[in-house]
Length: 106
Image 1 (cartoon, rainbow, N blue to C red):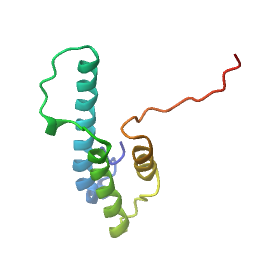
Image 2 (tube, rainbow, N blue to C red):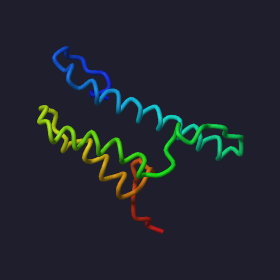
Image 3 (spheres, rainbow, N blue to C red):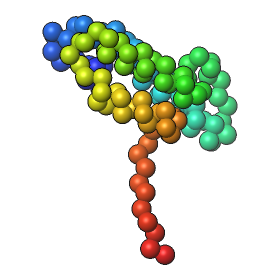
Image 4 (cartoon, one colour):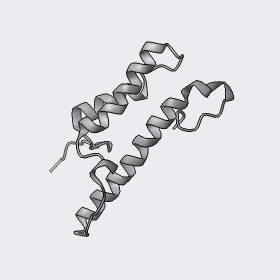
């Protein structure tokens, strides 16, 4: 969210990341809406280019941002939330919700 809406004017150099991550956010919202329609057995006439079909499609722009941040040394650490998100997508796919695993006493 900080990359999407920077509050400091000296962060103008992160504008390309804002564009890329803004597109990812929009596509994720459309993917969510598409899945909701499919779960309700409603027609879904979205263009396949407007949503993510696979986790690889989601990983592509995330890895692009990560590699760019690493290579340019912009002062924004790529080994934080972005790296965590990449690991979660690579491990669990597009299921990005947090899991609550508990042992059942029954």
